Image (cartoon, rainbow, N blue to C red):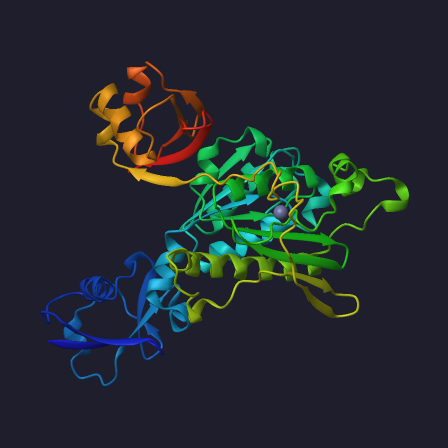
Length: 416
Ligand SMILES: [Zn+2]
């Protein structure tokens, strides 16, 4: 028996089934053909839910298709199944689990992002509850990243969440390297500089956002060649900027107004859409193609928003040759090439591992230092067969290889 099924405004398919089959089997066949998750799909007929256990023979004399009600069906009209699958397999790191972190995490989970990492050292305070959707009074005193990860996953179980409690600087590098996009929702300049350094060095796209009262700004940074978020700061003001850990620590005359729920949702909405654009387009862009039309162009200038006067002003950015991070003398002036290597190549023997790594990083002779980058942190591999054996797929090796000039060049290898 042949049954028509429709993902409205996207695709219509036909499925052949034995009339004795159940609608559960029908759903499985439809989902297999469309390549969508059956656990996130329901079937409807004339607006009514089809029960899993009824026989498909009952559909014999019914005109019109069975409607496939997939969780992200409406998205497919805009970026197709391929786009949604990219979003499902993406990992986003949210640096800062505060106002922007909460709201962006909600948006990204609703859009279907597969994995969300959170990092924050601060604990939930009462004044957060009025502005951060996943925090409740019972969470007071507990770490923001851990609470956000737990409460978000409870509400959106199809997004995996992971939290790191502490400073960005102490988080294992693997969490950064595993991320397709980094969202910066930090409230201090020192951490923003650190995050920008990591993103430039390892070529991880970043969406930076900030709020002061009813003013907000967003910037999408595509490293290594775009102007970075630190390029806007005049170099002669670094000492002043770096000394300012938090806007609330500023002298009284410079104290800024905190964020409001309205400015938070506005800026987070733009940050979230920018993140989706980067997930959808960065792969093709890196291979030399244009951004795909269906994703939209990322915002590579800074967009300033003034909710009080309803002004939305983009500001073009230029690379600052004296930038503290990406300038010619900047802390992240060198970018690190990244390679993949099968884990079997390093497990055979120490000699074979070294040969495979030298080949991968194009360093035939000279000093070679190999460090493992796992979720437990960094460790020297040296002569430690046990440490080599404990490496898993998805771990990284940081390789420092001597060049002809006697310098050490860094490369990053992901074990596949
Ligand atoms: Zn810069």
